[in-house]
Length: 149
Image (cartoon, rainbow, N blue to C red; front, side, top):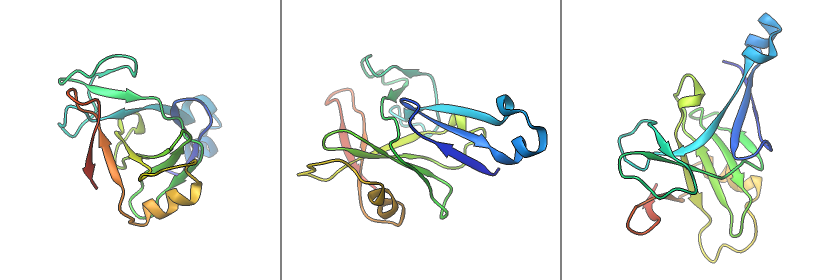
């Protein structure tokens, strides 16, 4: 799929399948979006999820509010990276391999402390090139716990 990834549309990631659009001219069929869902139940797939304002449910995944400021697809593995503008900021990765992309899982990487300022798009490029970051997974007992990536 030839994909144009989009940002700036709120707490989701959007895309246009340019090959389908070129072939059909149908923009409605050629576009899509996905919410950012963390695999908080740890089964490796996207399941039913709770909303960001709901408590973690150990049997479900968790949607996060982390709209992309910038979007950068990785030529290495097909994942899609975006910076989340907050303080101290974060980098979000949409895992590759999901077809359709609506079923993709997200990972969120916090900026290492002291973490002052916002995440720049160049940070995404460094992250997708193999720099070490800490992935955040949500845990019912602590609200969040980090796991090395």
